[in-house]
Image 1 (tube, one colour):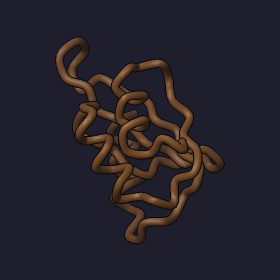
Image 2 (cartoon, helix red, strand yellow):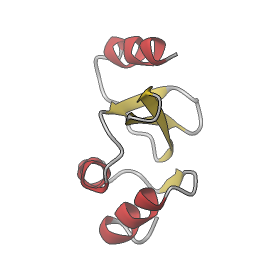
Image 3 (cartoon, rainbow, N blue to C red):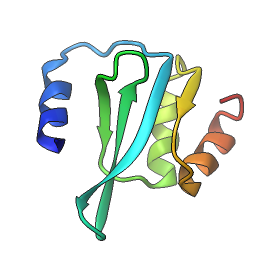
Image 4 (cartoon, rainbow, N blue to C red):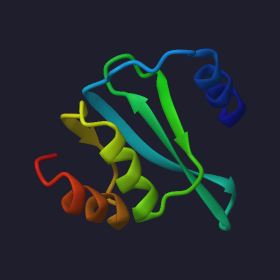
Length: 90
């Protein structure tokens, strides 16, 4: 699954604006290292794969994408912390 997402993201040469996104973490190696997959919530196409799920990484990505108006996510605390500090309107 991860290889498929990486392939899809690499095939998209231009970045497209997606106002509604979904975020979910995944394990690169179960219990040791986690990444973050960001998908377009309307088309379910992967937009970006972040190397980790740290608060600083999420905040940098949110700052680089001001077109985001809504995010769906699970209850992982770092998602909420990152969003509240950078974009409290989400």
